Image 1: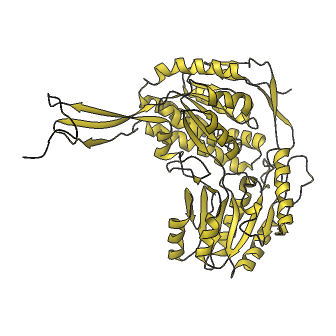
Image 2: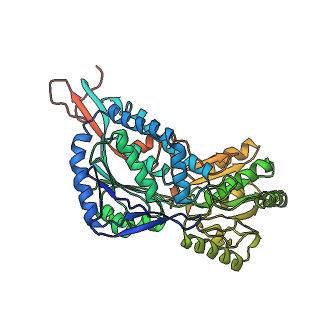
Length: 491
């Protein structure tokens, strides 16, 4: 028997107005995980009404009290970490150790944002006039819509939910249709932690029917979206004057200089390129190697790749899990064919694997030119391209010759190389002697160029995404003062 799950709207678990459901499956074996409501515009309308009503009282709850609820959520999730990790692996496919990391990210962001309930800092500043006080403080946006992807099905929703809630917004949460079970379990946990009725609403369903209904709804004050560039552009087109935060694609480079610790660099490339089966916006899909160490690096890399074990992520022996679905497999293989046609040299992989699920062999191309499609377009799978360069200047130029700018990395023991990379690489994140993935929740995460629209998540900038700045003036002079007109010089 397959369990049928429901929307959560206005404090109740209810069926969709559509009367339809869809199935979520385990990508490792195609077994059903559960049935979920196929939401529509009527469901969004109902969720907006519930969220609008709840916002009136939720925004007046003192922020430290809102923080106590997030802290309880973190504590509950910590106790159930293994259970949630197994749900992540079962529904999304990533190996169990990464499933635990996914859940730990959520624990960390709930704890961090709980603390922000005692900060939510504004500014005080001197006035240009006598006997006048100036300050700012933060206010919630109102009802916000959160649209999240499948690749980090607990962590990314938590990254959005925690700041949205601590700022006093009410929320409508639309998760990916590939991982609705993770979303449902996370919402249930937050409700258990004490989120009031109507403050957090969950509507599952397709991007066209549910996501766009959120984006277009006139009562939604903010949209936060993580996903593809194509959908991000569509959101901007239809959102109107809402606050919109976009975290889109990446084509992230790792530079390996001739003085690098090659063994450390190989480990970073393996983790960056094939962790989460390459299904990260921060995945290291371009490896830019100094020509003097290219052959040595490739030999070491292949030695490691040949030892990788592809299979069901729930098994402790598995290193690389499945792709999310059949469409993803076909996309990755399509880029393998493109790479061959463009003249790149296939060093390893490039094949479907004969297993029950959506498995693809870790793939490496060498002799790749920076202009090839496999070096320009986001593949979102276990495929990396090796590009040779002659010096740090060319490495940085190749690094920047791309439409995206999310994460980047350089392996070097030369401090000049390191600081040139930090200064010159066009990306929101740069790592030195570490891979392109991973993010600490107290620091901003996001990118430049076509990776997004300039917003950042996590850290204090996560608060900025979900709040407005209000400026306050208190004039206690007892008379009308005119800024820029009155003479306030010291006499």
